[in-house]
Image (cartoon, rainbow, N blue to C red; front, side, top):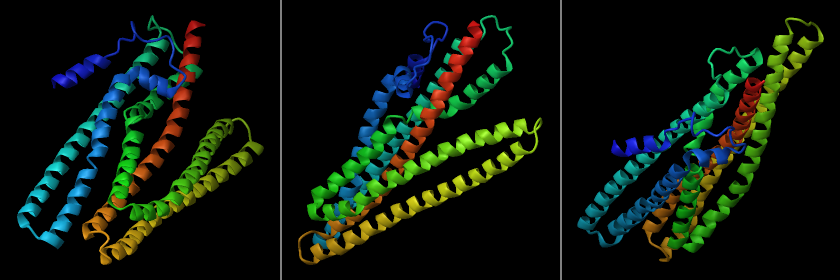
Length: 334
């Protein structure tokens, strides 16, 4: 509790005294200004988490080798106990990391709301905002939640997932370079194809949002005009349908490629690794460790793809909020 209290005091904002007169135009500048010290601590915790990913893999390898070669039950017992203890430690640290991320996100959300209040609130509390400004206020209130939610993971999430990928791949090459090359060769097309598909999905998503805004504007105009506006609205609705279907096809195709690549890697490890075992080049535990390592590559890669999709969306939302706050401040000055 004492640590939580100190963190609360460290990030406690006083918008009347300390808040800048405008929001930073860049999302990451806002993140570093608001939560810079906490991002450093999150990064350190993240480093511990992805380094501990190696311990279970190595313990599994040693247990299998012990069972198939020396057959010493006492060693197996202590290795299994070490595995359980390491899983507990890793889980507790990851739990702390996730809770800390959530706290940083909520603190950033609170800070963003306070900044908006300090920059745009009426000093007298009696002024009535025009209708346009009221819409902008509603948009700011709605969008600060997803922006703040992104802040806690803005740096630690890509660091964690990239760290897991690099650490696990390095461990695989340490165990058996040739088997590592086979696994990497199957994984490489995945690295180039998936981001390209995600980029197309992002473009379609942005176009879909813009089209939906036109549909909303057309619904408002439909009360005063007839004929062509309704026909245009029908075309826009059909366009949204086609965009959504295209997004579904691309998304499920990307999932298919990721799953297929995962299973091809396992097939390659079993085929080439089995040949190495039969020829006495490596131990059986090494193949088991390789298959476990492959299982730890798919999730972080998928999480990285999701992160960059969320980053693209949050950048757009942050620019909209910053622009809305600037307009609100201009209206108040006028």
